[in-house]
Length: 229
Image 1 (cartoon, rainbow, N blue to C red):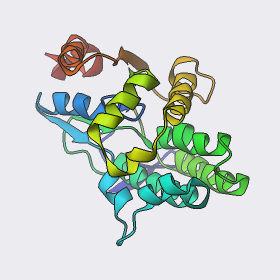
Image 2 (image 1 turned 90 degrees about the horizontal axis):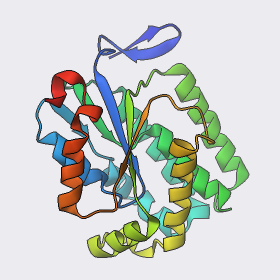
Image 3 (image 1 turned 120 degrees about the horizontal axis):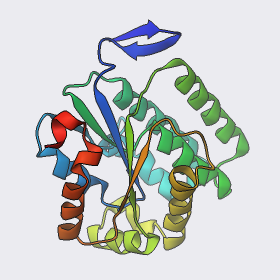
Protein backbone atom coordinates (compact mmCIF):
# COMPACT_ATOMS: atom_id res chain seq x y z
CA UNK A 1 0.00 0.00 0.00
CA UNK A 2 1.29 3.46 -0.89
CA UNK A 3 1.21 6.47 1.39
CA UNK A 4 2.46 10.03 1.05
CA UNK A 5 5.73 11.17 2.62
CA UNK A 6 7.42 14.52 1.91
CA UNK A 7 5.43 14.86 -1.31
CA UNK A 8 6.29 11.40 -2.66
CA UNK A 9 4.29 8.20 -2.63
CA UNK A 10 6.08 5.50 -0.62
CA UNK A 11 5.38 1.95 0.53
CA UNK A 12 4.12 1.86 4.12
CA UNK A 13 6.71 0.75 6.68
CA UNK A 14 9.17 -0.71 4.20
CA UNK A 15 11.83 1.98 4.01
CA UNK A 16 14.38 -0.11 5.95
CA UNK A 17 14.42 -3.01 3.53
CA UNK A 18 17.37 -3.17 1.13
CA UNK A 19 16.77 -2.96 -2.63
CA UNK A 20 19.56 -4.14 -4.96
CA UNK A 21 19.33 -3.82 -8.75
CA UNK A 22 21.32 -6.16 -10.99
CA UNK A 23 22.20 -4.28 -14.20
CA UNK A 24 23.96 -5.24 -17.39
CA UNK A 25 23.71 -5.83 -21.12
CA UNK A 26 21.51 -8.49 -22.71
CA UNK A 27 23.04 -11.90 -21.84
CA UNK A 28 25.45 -10.42 -19.28
CA UNK A 29 24.48 -13.08 -16.73
CA UNK A 30 21.83 -11.29 -14.65
CA UNK A 31 19.63 -14.37 -14.34
CA UNK A 32 22.54 -16.50 -13.14
CA UNK A 33 23.42 -13.87 -10.55
CA UNK A 34 19.85 -13.69 -9.27
CA UNK A 35 19.57 -17.49 -9.11
CA UNK A 36 22.76 -17.67 -7.06
CA UNK A 37 21.54 -15.20 -4.45
CA UNK A 38 18.01 -16.62 -4.39
CA UNK A 39 19.46 -19.79 -2.83
CA UNK A 40 21.01 -17.92 0.09
CA UNK A 41 17.68 -17.45 1.84
CA UNK A 42 15.41 -14.61 2.99
CA UNK A 43 16.02 -12.67 -0.22
CA UNK A 44 13.23 -11.75 -2.60
CA UNK A 45 14.26 -12.01 -6.26
CA UNK A 46 12.31 -10.20 -8.99
CA UNK A 47 13.25 -11.03 -12.56
CA UNK A 48 12.29 -8.77 -15.47
CA UNK A 49 8.62 -9.33 -16.36
CA UNK A 50 9.54 -10.54 -19.86
CA UNK A 51 6.51 -12.84 -20.04
CA UNK A 52 4.29 -9.76 -19.75
CA UNK A 53 6.25 -7.97 -22.49
CA UNK A 54 5.71 -11.00 -24.73
CA UNK A 55 1.99 -11.31 -24.06
CA UNK A 56 -0.27 -8.40 -23.20
CA UNK A 57 -3.81 -9.54 -23.95
CA UNK A 58 -2.55 -11.73 -26.75
CA UNK A 59 -0.07 -9.25 -28.25
CA UNK A 60 3.74 -9.46 -28.20
CA UNK A 61 5.09 -5.89 -27.97
CA UNK A 62 8.64 -7.17 -27.36
CA UNK A 63 8.68 -9.13 -30.60
CA UNK A 64 7.02 -6.26 -32.48
CA UNK A 65 9.63 -3.78 -31.20
CA UNK A 66 12.55 -5.91 -32.45
CA UNK A 67 10.86 -6.26 -35.86
CA UNK A 68 9.97 -2.56 -36.27
CA UNK A 69 11.42 -0.37 -33.48
CA UNK A 70 10.31 2.93 -35.02
CA UNK A 71 6.67 1.84 -34.99
CA UNK A 72 6.59 -0.18 -31.76
CA UNK A 73 9.36 1.32 -29.57
CA UNK A 74 7.00 3.68 -27.74
CA UNK A 75 4.43 0.93 -27.26
CA UNK A 76 6.91 -1.46 -25.68
CA UNK A 77 8.76 1.10 -23.59
CA UNK A 78 5.55 2.57 -22.18
CA UNK A 79 4.59 -0.91 -21.00
CA UNK A 80 8.13 -1.63 -19.74
CA UNK A 81 7.97 1.58 -17.70
CA UNK A 82 4.62 0.56 -16.20
CA UNK A 83 5.67 -3.00 -15.35
CA UNK A 84 9.02 -1.90 -13.86
CA UNK A 85 7.25 0.77 -11.79
CA UNK A 86 4.96 -1.99 -10.49
CA UNK A 87 8.07 -3.99 -9.52
CA UNK A 88 9.56 -1.04 -7.63
CA UNK A 89 6.45 -0.14 -5.61
CA UNK A 90 5.11 -3.62 -4.86
CA UNK A 91 5.23 -4.81 -1.25
CA UNK A 92 8.60 -6.33 -0.36
CA UNK A 93 8.28 -9.89 0.91
CA UNK A 94 11.74 -10.21 2.55
CA UNK A 95 14.38 -8.01 4.23
CA UNK A 96 16.32 -7.84 0.94
CA UNK A 97 14.95 -7.44 -2.60
CA UNK A 98 17.10 -8.11 -5.66
CA UNK A 99 15.71 -6.85 -8.97
CA UNK A 100 16.73 -7.61 -12.53
CA UNK A 101 17.32 -4.15 -13.99
CA UNK A 102 15.14 -1.17 -13.00
CA UNK A 103 12.91 1.61 -14.25
CA UNK A 104 16.10 3.70 -14.45
CA UNK A 105 17.92 1.46 -16.95
CA UNK A 106 14.69 1.14 -18.94
CA UNK A 107 14.93 4.89 -19.52
CA UNK A 108 18.67 5.62 -19.50
CA UNK A 109 19.66 2.59 -21.59
CA UNK A 110 16.86 1.24 -23.76
CA UNK A 111 14.74 4.33 -24.43
CA UNK A 112 17.91 6.36 -24.89
CA UNK A 113 19.28 3.83 -27.37
CA UNK A 114 16.12 3.86 -29.48
CA UNK A 115 16.22 7.65 -29.60
CA UNK A 116 19.95 8.05 -30.31
CA UNK A 117 19.86 5.42 -33.05
CA UNK A 118 17.13 7.36 -34.84
CA UNK A 119 14.55 4.61 -34.33
CA UNK A 120 12.36 6.57 -31.92
CA UNK A 121 10.72 9.82 -33.10
CA UNK A 122 11.51 12.84 -30.96
CA UNK A 123 7.88 13.23 -29.90
CA UNK A 124 7.79 9.62 -28.59
CA UNK A 125 11.02 10.25 -26.67
CA UNK A 126 9.59 13.46 -25.22
CA UNK A 127 6.43 11.69 -24.03
CA UNK A 128 8.39 8.86 -22.35
CA UNK A 129 10.75 11.38 -20.74
CA UNK A 130 7.84 13.40 -19.34
CA UNK A 131 6.32 10.24 -17.87
CA UNK A 132 9.65 9.12 -16.39
CA UNK A 133 10.33 12.50 -14.81
CA UNK A 134 6.84 12.62 -13.29
CA UNK A 135 7.23 9.11 -11.86
CA UNK A 136 10.67 9.70 -10.36
CA UNK A 137 9.61 13.07 -8.93
CA UNK A 138 6.39 11.85 -7.33
CA UNK A 139 7.00 8.22 -6.37
CA UNK A 140 9.73 7.04 -4.01
CA UNK A 141 11.71 4.13 -5.47
CA UNK A 142 14.84 3.85 -3.32
CA UNK A 143 17.72 1.68 -4.55
CA UNK A 144 20.51 0.84 -2.09
CA UNK A 145 23.00 -0.70 -4.53
CA UNK A 146 23.45 -1.21 -8.27
CA UNK A 147 25.46 -4.30 -9.23
CA UNK A 148 26.80 -3.81 -12.76
CA UNK A 149 27.74 -7.02 -14.56
CA UNK A 150 30.29 -5.57 -16.95
CA UNK A 151 30.45 -7.77 -20.04
CA UNK A 152 31.95 -7.26 -23.48
CA UNK A 153 29.42 -7.01 -26.34
CA UNK A 154 31.20 -9.89 -28.08
CA UNK A 155 30.65 -12.19 -25.08
CA UNK A 156 26.98 -11.19 -24.92
CA UNK A 157 26.57 -11.90 -28.63
CA UNK A 158 28.03 -15.39 -28.28
CA UNK A 159 25.77 -16.14 -25.31
CA UNK A 160 22.72 -14.87 -27.21
CA UNK A 161 23.38 -17.25 -30.08
CA UNK A 162 23.56 -20.16 -27.64
CA UNK A 163 20.37 -19.46 -25.70
CA UNK A 164 18.18 -19.00 -28.84
CA UNK A 165 15.31 -16.87 -27.55
CA UNK A 166 12.96 -16.18 -30.44
CA UNK A 167 12.87 -12.36 -30.14
CA UNK A 168 16.66 -12.17 -29.76
CA UNK A 169 17.52 -13.87 -33.06
CA UNK A 170 17.47 -10.51 -34.85
CA UNK A 171 19.80 -8.72 -32.38
CA UNK A 172 23.08 -7.75 -34.11
CA UNK A 173 26.42 -7.18 -32.40
CA UNK A 174 26.11 -3.44 -33.12
CA UNK A 175 23.00 -3.25 -30.94
CA UNK A 176 24.82 -4.88 -28.02
CA UNK A 177 27.74 -2.46 -28.53
CA UNK A 178 25.35 0.50 -28.29
CA UNK A 179 23.74 -0.87 -25.12
CA UNK A 180 27.19 -1.51 -23.63
CA UNK A 181 28.32 2.07 -24.26
CA UNK A 182 25.17 3.49 -22.66
CA UNK A 183 25.73 1.32 -19.58
CA UNK A 184 29.35 2.50 -19.41
CA UNK A 185 28.26 6.14 -19.68
CA UNK A 186 25.61 5.69 -16.98
CA UNK A 187 27.44 3.55 -14.39
CA UNK A 188 31.16 4.04 -15.10
CA UNK A 189 31.66 7.45 -16.75
CA UNK A 190 28.64 8.94 -14.90
CA UNK A 191 27.78 11.20 -17.84
CA UNK A 192 24.12 10.20 -18.35
CA UNK A 193 22.36 11.20 -15.14
CA UNK A 194 22.87 11.47 -11.38
CA UNK A 195 23.12 8.06 -9.73
CA UNK A 196 20.71 7.33 -6.89
CA UNK A 197 22.80 4.48 -5.47
CA UNK A 198 26.41 3.28 -5.19
CA UNK A 199 27.64 0.98 -7.96
CA UNK A 200 29.53 -2.30 -7.58
CA UNK A 201 31.19 -3.39 -10.84
CA UNK A 202 31.68 -7.12 -11.36
CA UNK A 203 33.54 -8.27 -14.51
CA UNK A 204 31.25 -10.88 -16.07
CA UNK A 205 32.92 -12.28 -19.19
CA UNK A 206 33.95 -15.56 -17.53
CA UNK A 207 32.25 -18.96 -17.61
CA UNK A 208 29.55 -20.07 -15.19
CA UNK A 209 31.88 -21.67 -12.65
CA UNK A 210 34.10 -18.59 -12.47
CA UNK A 211 31.10 -16.28 -12.16
CA UNK A 212 29.60 -18.25 -9.27
CA UNK A 213 32.95 -17.98 -7.50
CA UNK A 214 32.99 -14.22 -8.17
CA UNK A 215 29.50 -13.79 -6.70
CA UNK A 216 30.62 -15.62 -3.59
CA UNK A 217 33.69 -13.38 -3.33
CA UNK A 218 31.49 -10.28 -3.53
CA UNK A 219 28.68 -11.51 -1.31
CA UNK A 220 29.59 -9.27 1.62
CA UNK A 221 29.76 -6.23 -0.70
CA UNK A 222 26.36 -6.95 -2.21
CA UNK A 223 24.23 -8.01 0.73
CA UNK A 224 23.60 -6.11 3.99
CA UNK A 225 25.78 -7.33 6.91
CA UNK A 226 22.98 -9.43 8.41
CA UNK A 227 22.68 -11.42 5.15
CA UNK A 228 26.29 -11.59 3.97
CA UNK A 229 27.48 -14.38 6.24
